[in-house]
Image (cartoon, rainbow, N blue to C red; front, side):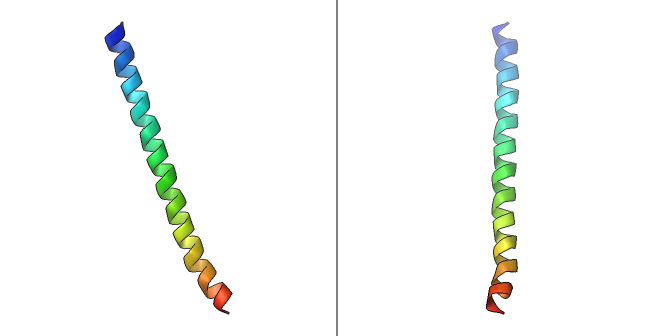
Length: 44
């Protein structure tokens, strides 16, 4: 019982960490793209 719970908990924590990493990476990429798009617009 405890082993199965530990296994499921590990899998869930890995999923949460993966989602956090993907969300953070996507956010930084969006910021990078937004800044690269915003610079030419503000320069005009």
